[in-house]
Amino acid sequence: MITVFSDEYYMKQALMEAQKALEDDEIPIGAVMVCNDKIIARTHNQTERLNDVTAHAEMLAITAAANALGAKYLDECTLYVTLEPCPMCAGALAHAHVGKVVYAADDPKNGFSKYGNMLHPKTKLVTGVKKEECLALLTDFFKKKR
Amino acid sequence: MITVFSDEYYMKQALMEAQKALEDDEIPIGAVMVCNDKIIARTHNQTERLNDVTAHAEMLAITAAANALGAKYLDECTLYVTLEPCPMCAGALAHAHVGKVVYAADDPKNGFSKYGNMLHPKTKLVTGVKKEECLALLTDFFKKKR
Image (cartoon, rainbow over all chains, first blue to last red; front, side, top):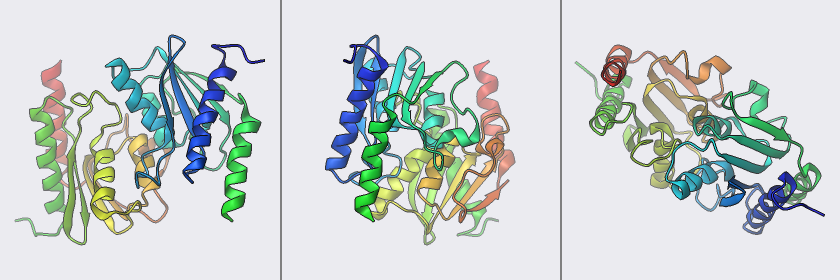
């Protein structure tokens, strides 16, 4: 059972977004931005559809959340994302002062953490939530691509 | 005298973009993306106007250039920008495989290079072109803000 308002609950929503990316033949990564227990942005990777390398789930979530709140800084928000953000996205999360970042699976090759902690010093970081499910989606996708 | 098609020429165009940012009371940073000696994108920082921390000159230039070329990868392109890119922008430039990056002034506090070279291994990097003029614009802006 998943408790509503738990990290597991919101990560499940991010995973549903990743599924949508998969249906569009995009690398299946999804994100949701949560503010005061409310999902204010649901996004997934759209680099192929938009033909734009900057269209990662996290980037789209930051822009959508800023639009929803009418605020540039997202210190009251939590980003849930199914894979460890890359340096581009970690840099954007830092600029936005996102209050908390929760990611599912580590990305040892392309994740930001190989550069140390690039997030804002006040950002709380939680990792590993639903990592098996999120990783399985990615592994299956790349297996089928080979 | 500035030779057309030189780094100085294109950096001057980026500086003109930075001036536009200044007129809009944005941090004055400008960029141009050049492909086969042709400017395919002219952008400046718009984080205030768009209320979006991701709207750096470089990010906007990457998206605009990809639209102009109908291509996600920009290996034939050179980005000129008036300040050293931040980690977010350096990450995006890496994703886009930008062929060459030329920046004017170093940004020891917020620039990407404090994390090592985050650009694509094949990206050629040139620094210091018109750095005094580009830095003067920024210094004046922040002096007036204090």
